Length: 130
Image (cartoon, rainbow, N blue to C red):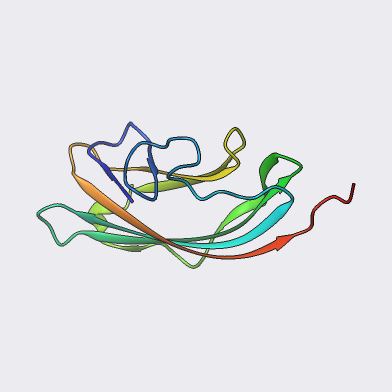
């Protein structure tokens, strides 16, 4: 989860809401593993009924220690929610340095927002044979 207060600074969502730190609060993609992921993000504005949902699907692969998104991140359906949060966005990438999934969000100018994400994944491990 995580919080934003403006539209200009991307904030990484982590398992504990703190700044991303190595592998301690990120979703790790083990070596020689592919993960099929469906990510559901919900955002709520402080002191308001404004809320939004963003649903994404992607495959991320760690091949011999090199982690990348396979293909593109797909938007499932249409993002839904309040018109006041229409400009809220998310970017999903591979953090190759730490072999993790990186989920970033951008908020709304001068608006306090809290995000929570739910991830469902299926993993296939195929280690190299020495």
